Length: 178
Image 1 (cartoon, helix red, strand yellow):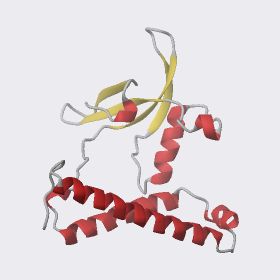
Image 2 (tube, helix red, strand yellow):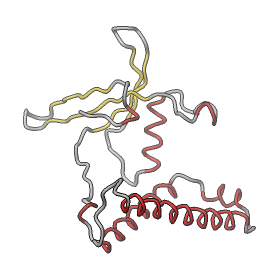
Image 3 (tube, one colour):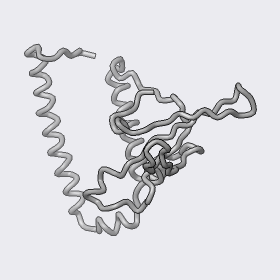
């Protein structure tokens, strides 16, 4: 199984468990979990097991998580080193939208659905009372978001102009007029 960029160099195990008969398999995956890349900046995690940290994050962000999601620390019989793992059901149900063949209306709808899903996941991860207390009742946060949005829009326009110039110069190929 091919792993993502963040998993390169870590251990991953596939486990086959049998159910009531040979036609009832259960595949689990145990993936090594390492300390968070944020620890040098944000301090040590409250979790003593990196797998538990990953599981807690997944449960927080997902509306419905895997019933087999868990964590464990295992000492290797080869080198004696204890490593943290998280376990989940192995399913290859991942799918991807074919954005290359979407018309502009469908691409716009797909973008809105992705944005809504991401916003909902992030909204689940925060304590609304703590956030409200932190932000206060002033307009500083609103103004900061508006300033960021304007700057982001301007950068987007510059990037698009650079893309158009690269297409015109023949440095990259693009399909236009979809």
